[in-house]
Length: 164
Length: 190
Image 1: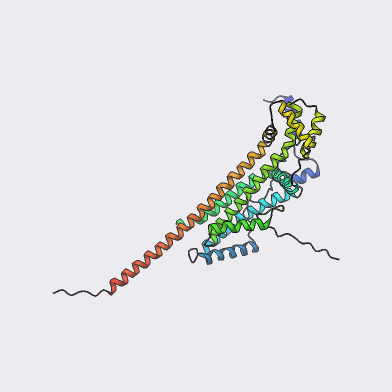
Image 2: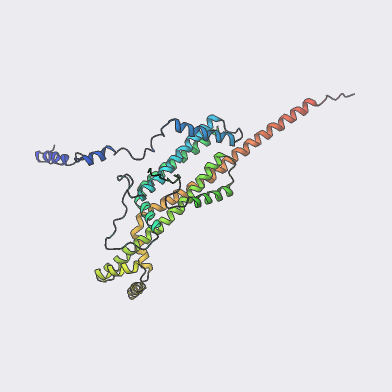
């Protein structure tokens, strides 16, 4: 059983880790669960449905009757998920390049450079973009997993439709 | 007067520092090689072109990351391992980074005195960048497997098409045989 001293220490320590105190900290904590929204299915709105229909009809028309519209819709929807992840990957690097660490929380700032050393003479764009990719690396690894899953889902849809 | 903003078309693959024309050229050449026959094969061809584009991007980034780490590596090498005085090492690294020939010669001479050359600077830079390079390597491997899957996806799809064509051809043959057997007259013997 915990002693009085341990109980007091536990109480003191728990007060230290009771979440953010400042308004900015609280605002940031409200977004903790939100990352990139890729784990959730894409919002099915009129725009999404239109995209699915366009792609599905392209699939039907180009496969000479091998794929019917129902199957084509499944494939189109899965392919659009892949494209959504790809757009997020490009946006993540672009956003980091544009000056921020992407969403702050989930991009590890990779290097803590020695202030004594100057920046080497590299081409402006290449140097900045390398820095952006470096900063976005941990986010890119996460997004890579999502892309892999999205592609696997799409391929599974295609394979199971034709293997049956 | 109202200011008109010209926005760049947002591409899902191309970054602001990359050339959209070059990406389109490469995509075209991949499509010319793969010759996708329908929209599903185009999806796989897009997987291949996207992976190939990203592989180039990551390789460029890996190179740049090592280049960025060179001055720090030289500074650490000079000041911590070769006993060069810290302020002098800072000046030397700054001049060396700006391509100053005098500084380059001095650095080479210091390294030479200890039996080293410029590859020691590169080694230090690579070691310092290893966590990032390892992460890039993982992404490169992932891209490579995606490209291979794109190719195997096209192969799978073509196999399906071939099988379907075979089924249709067989059905035609069966129909022809059935037609022919119906048209055969019974032969009277005796």
